[in-house]
Image 1 (cartoon, rainbow, N blue to C red):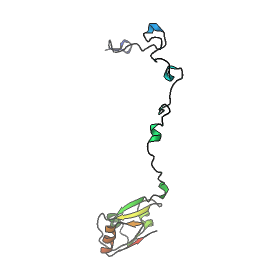
Image 2 (cartoon, helix red, strand yellow; image 1 turned 90 degrees about the vertical axis):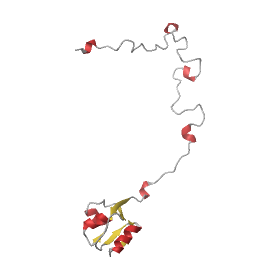
Image 3 (cartoon, rainbow, N blue to C red; image 1 turned 30 degrees about the horizontal axis):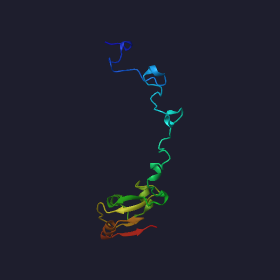
Amino acid sequence: MSLLENLKPKKGSTHYPKRIGRGIGSGMGGTSTKGHKGQLARTGGKVRRGFEGGQTPLTRRLPKFGFTNASFANNFQIISLTDLAKLGASTVDAASLYKAGLGKKSDKFKILAKGELTKAITVKAHAFSEKAKEAIEKAGGKTEVIK
């Protein structure tokens, strides 16, 4: 069993780091691997990320895209005909959908035609797909759009 104090790296797997700026004897010469003159040879001579030497940087040359104001977005909570059938009510509106746990009070509801309706119901929602509207009316129900 090997002990922690006896562990060492495999022979040849490690080497000493470069000792930059330690004179001619270090093997790095008088310029310490920085080349001759120029901004990068100076102390503190660094350029910020994205700087292209005075040329307009790539981030400014690329086209920009518009701002989308999410407060005006129409995000609908989707309700299927199957969900309406499970409710078993004769009239369905936003409040009853909220009470059934199908959305939040602030949600707008859109009815989609997934599933089937067997009995006539009156549905009040913010939006309907065309097929859902047809399916509700075919079952003898009514649709009303809430503004």
